[in-house]
Length: 637
Image (cartoon, rainbow, N blue to C red):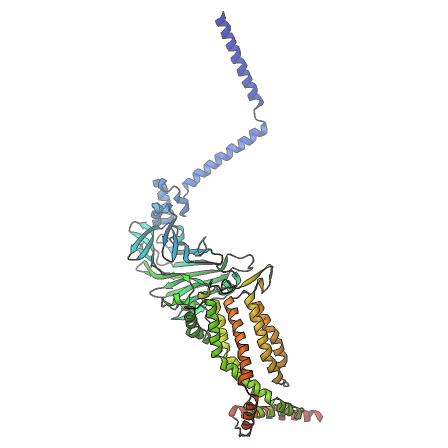
């Protein structure tokens, strides 16, 4: 009985549990809306699975898409890969296709070579940092691209930047050799070969092919494309950008450059080298054996707003057609990544130092022959700021005779002023006669306004040469003096919470000091000139112009040089202080007006023979006076 009872209870229990489960399932069954959503989700999952299978069956031609499963390709997939990239499918099947970077370190470089494309992914200069103490990178974060575009015998156009290169690193004596090979078989390949020398910024670089004469289509052009955005390294991006330009040498030694701002391009022939100069650092591609036959170059200014565009200054591009030789490529070059330093560049004997803007013509010659060697000598044993001051003193001593000539001329004109005023009063109704008599008196006395101007003109080549020297002097970079922490950049003593157009967002002290010195110097010199300079009819009011210049020149210095190299402002400050001192010495201790007057009187008594120019001018003035009188008589009639 008990067993039967137990069995009945068990059955009842199971029935109850089953009933409860049915009830729970009924209560939790999906609504019609939920069933519809579930149906849609299942359909989407089916479609995604179909799409995934289709992608697995369809192969593309870029290296990244193959790398993940390259070893899992079956024979059919390998055949399809072969149909898409031809002989270069072999490169996709190598273990190197999975690699990313090969790193090499030398005394001056830390380099990263990207197996995709075979070129440099990073170029770090070990011995330099930027204004913010960050290491200097010439190449980083995809700012540079290096690609060869070529045709194949099976009518494809391929790009090396899409393919993996197999890297090997070896030694050749003290040199490090990096070989990057794009292979079509184990013994047939396109090779980028880099040879790095100790303590050397010049990299031997060659592009060679082996066994590809049947792979290349030699009837189609093969083009090297090199692009690079210049990375900002200085405090003032606008100042750095001013000295960032694409420069090149072509036609047996001619050096030229693209525009400083905006966009510019050029088609060249017989190119020796192309320099992507970015003020104090340069990336240069040099033709080693023979010049590049042709080159297409462009430059684009990337700084439209210096408050927003703060990472890069210029975008440079170069396209170089390469030549086939026996169906193969064999081009030897060198690549330079390093300082835009005259001493460093000159040692390669390729004229690379000509990429530095020392100034054209005589200005560049003065810098290269005088100021660069002089400053190099002084800075070898003096602090850089002191070397600038000493060089300024030497330059002013060298030009002191010019100031003496100027003051001597002014002294003569001052002595002659009463006599010249009397002549102008006497012939006030005959302006031409007054001018003739004035010129005659000045000629007999050996005094002329031009004799004071010409010595001043002699200073212009020196002035401009130094204006070009200081902003390009690599030796001044990050050298401190007094409150200036970098003589190659501005010496900010106050940061402004706003930006003033043309002035900047800071206040530099050396330009203020230079402006004050220029004001007092011009006040002393121009004031005396205005006192002795007559206003002639038909001529500009020189006294008024000089008065404006007294205030305009210091203001120009104050605004324009606020973002310039503090070494240049230091030079102008010291230069004008010395000029003031020289002027006071000449005026008070050297020039004796009584002796000058005595010499003038002696000179007046001597017969003065006119030269051809003076006779011609006198004749022209006489003819002009006669025509004027004839016109006046005609009006009276």
